[in-house]
Length: 263
Image 1 (cartoon, rainbow, N blue to C red):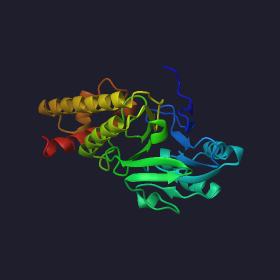
Image 2 (image 1 turned 30 degrees about the vertical axis):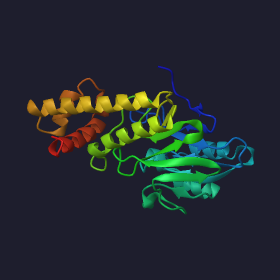
Image 3 (image 1 turned 135 degrees about the horizontal axis):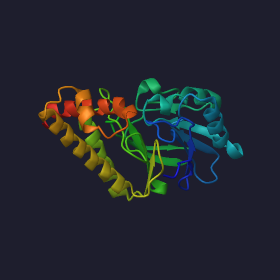
Image 4 (image 1 turned 90 degrees about the vertical axis):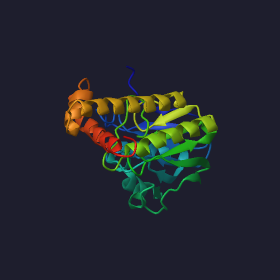
């Protein structure tokens, strides 16, 4: 497997990889710098974790050529994405905007629809499921979709129960599939892992995998698994045990889903 190191991924998007690799973060958190070619300012998406080295590198790359950071955006509030937001905002004197008002600093909460900053035009797409406050961004000029943790560049994401809900997540995947199709998007820029060139296929595979896991959970419960961890031991037996706590969160979300109107 080729390690992911970030770099320029589309004409307007550059990935600065945070030095926080791990089972949940893959190669690290992807911080994105979005800028129109030749523009005097830039948008930063997901500044990443609290890490002085990463903060300095993001600030230096964003400010290359005398550019200013005009806006900082968050895909969601998990600290590996948002931990450095306030420090970066203070360092470069830029506002922070997110769906969750508590994460905003000097800017209004995000809403669905078009957003323009630093001459970059984005579309905000709320995608609850991984977390309640998850959003994705369409970078129309590059045919790109920034997905945060809703869709990763490798493997699958966790539905972070109880904040994350499987009903919401499945609906969000369907919504993203429609956005990709209707807008002809060609690039998927995830919060972790490498960028992908077939976003529609990636999203379809995510949906299929999630439904397959749901059936496996249903079968495990029918066979007598009476706790979330009991289900994990059966359904995720071939998964590294370091990932079982995350799997347990997703299983709890799946069990909630099965107890609802879809069961």
